[in-house]
Image 1 (cartoon, helix red, strand yellow):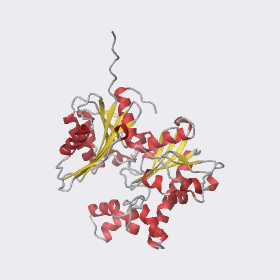
Image 2 (cartoon, rainbow, N blue to C red):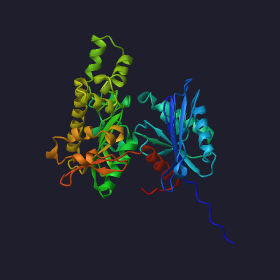
Image 3 (tube, rainbow, N blue to C red):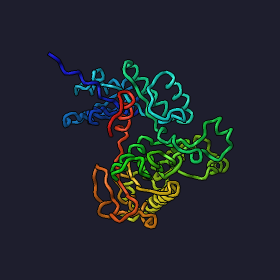
Image 4 (spheres, rainbow, N blue to C red):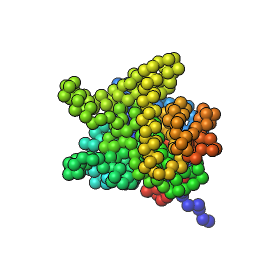
Length: 412
């Protein structure tokens, strides 16, 4: 009497470790089903909080625990306990791999990579160009490896999707020897989102990614644009760090580099003070005191001129990048909006496209006003270039890349 073969492990745990937080999802890659998700925040504080949502079989009520969680090891232990309570423990034989979001992979890491000592050493070497992110990512990696040393662990890099940029787009026009000595170039970020959304946009158009040119606008508190030709990034707005490019929630985006010299010489500000100004006290919050687009819209409707100006500056920069990337691509099949603002702020989408009819871009007011978690077109049928809203899914993208590397290709 024969017995059915035991199915291969197909679950992937995705970890996104910040300096004081861990965001996680557990997915079954047989169908991309989410089994559980959650967030541990304020790690190292007395007021630490873990919010866990079971999703298996329709899910049950979310759970929350509060109280001190001193470090990332304690955070992952708490996550493991919550998963075990749902029958999804980290010791399960169905767990195939753990995928880690790593912000900066430099030029060496152009694709997902199984983590070993050499990979960890290289991620550490990149800390000077990602001092806020790579150390936190390493904490999550080391903690997870200590908990499951037998399990494949994969790093998926935010920068990897952008390594296909030509040198003409990636290089800054500064002395080559200095740039090379200090690894100064444009790396780009939000790569997992840009990869996922550009492919999903192609599917929405009924085409293969290789057939489509897409401008992706990832608009959250952090914001970036990319020009994707045939599935490959050829330009992106963020640079050496996530500061360059679009106006963001708290980041300035593009400024004249001499602003920093001016602030040092005239205002007597230190390098650290200028760093805080441009990264934490600029963008929308610097312009009007709010970085929540919903609140900015409410203030505009109430006649607030400062909020209206902040909105106009935000949209002006968006239009500039749409036009620039149109020129870079030569032919554009779609402009795709994604992330919190891109998916939910109809006014931003309408304003960003307004006046670009000569480029074949238009938005249908009725379609734009609709709300949905599904990818959708918001452009009228006559528009030469499709305008789309495509909800991003970075965790699913990380899980797919992780599973594909460790267990074979995963169907989109």
